[in-house]
Image 1 (cartoon, rainbow, N blue to C red):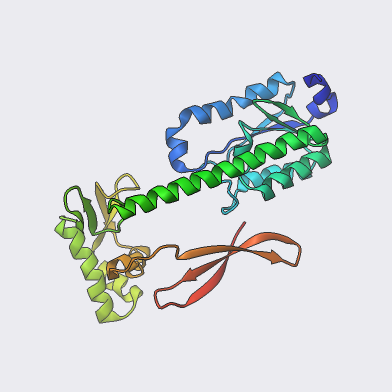
Image 2: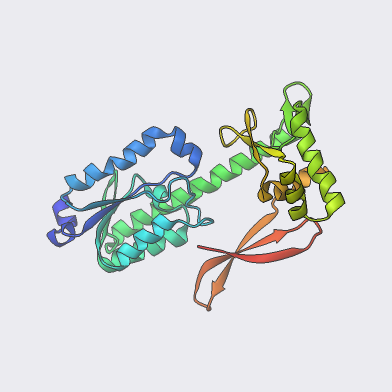
Length: 294
């Protein structure tokens, strides 16, 4: 069957949507070739005969595992529901989704409006049983691949911890030394500002009063120059979030804390399980629930 049969003239009158996504900001910054190949799909859409091509790249740096909101994917779904899309183009199935719920929801919508899915391997019609089977296999492989990657990363982390070589991110005031391991940052100014926050909190009893008193004395707080690491810092006026981040960090109390946030899926109005609630455990052992936007 030729591409002309799979892409009839009425579909070519609609728009083609190129969905661009990379899973993390590190990939966005470092994997430039992958990004270039995804944007090159615009030319692939035109080669198939589409004149109107739209690129959706709102989800750059967002995972497709189903645990974070993806405004770009939601916009793609809205365009499909409106019947404006003739084809969805992606580099591979994992760009669109790495969980069965989003993937099959997308295929159902494509089938309803007779839109096609196009990747580097060909053109797929979700209305055809064979094409739907192939797309389902691609999704299963993508989801399995994600689980394998998670398992490998978790096992590697446990092995490094067993050898005493695990290096986790540490808050302001601490640093990993090459020879002796974890220790205080040698910068006395860094140590002083952290100690001052705790001293003022014991004296004043509230984070807001700590902020007001430190602002009155024009105390500054360190901020990473590159936005990520504390190898080089800029000193800026202290803010409320700086005070809270120090007071609520269990690391300063010499307590190890992990998995303080647990996600669970709940049904809304007994129909679509799209809302997610987050359980946040506080330092006193209590917990509270808050909704997370999808």
